[in-house]
Each structure stands twice: as structure tokens, then as C-alpha cells.
Length: 155
Image (cartoon, rainbow, N blue to C red; front, top):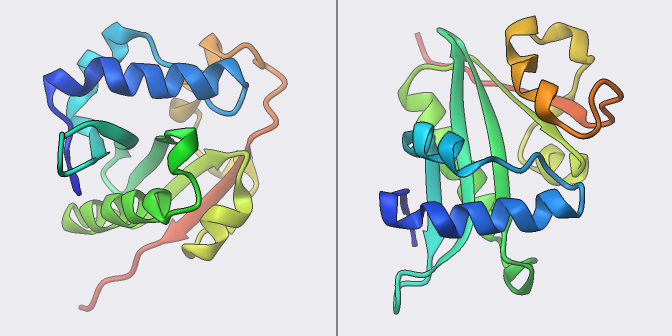
């Protein structure tokens, strides 16, 4: 079951992001930042006990630009479609806000390609989005792949 994150979920989200951050798969986030951006997050929980088993954030960058970030699934829950469900939930949320350009920075381009994202040159993204990179251990030698999904709307 997917729902918007609540304050009680922050420590579980932090643990997920720290796990993958320690492996270098994504940028870990400090607790203070997670509290600041709580409303960006959605979580996938087990219905029987409401335990968070995955998370994903949709962060707005500009009036028509948003980023899917911090997508993480418990290792024992991988390959069950949970990441795809969360990403599609974020895409639907972006559509509700009439976002046109939805991007991600990833080490898993094949995953996002299956969901309609295409590789782009990072120079297409505004400088504003690189603020979070300053705290990354890989800065300034980022090797993440930039991908974009253009969302269309009926007139």
C-alpha cells in the first residue's frame, strides 16, 4: 500500500536512504532534511503492520520541473514491482501539479527507461538543482545518469 509519508515514518526512511547511501547508490539525507521535506515523500507500507518497506520523493524545482529522488526499497523486497509502483505514484502526483519536465539522477537507468524516462545531458538541468550535490561524497565527479520524462496533457 502506498501513502504519503508521516512523521512516524522519518526514521524508517532515514534508515533506507542510509543503507543505500553507505553503498554509494544514492545520496543519503540527514534527519533534519527529511523532516524539512517530509511532504515530498511517499512510502510503501505493509498493510498488516504499516511498516515502511520503500520510499520515494517528488521534489518540485520550478513551476514546470520536478525531480524523483530518494527511491529506495528494502533489499529483501526488491524485484517485486514496489519501486515501479512508487515511481508511478510520483509520476501521477507530478501530473496533478501539471509538471511538464520530470527528471531523476540515477545509477539505474534501465529501471527508469522502462517507465518512460530517457537519458539527457546533465547540462539540460538548471544549476539550481545541483545544490544537494555539494554534500555528496562524489562531488564534483558525479557519475549519476540524468534522465527526463516529458509529461503531456490534453488541451
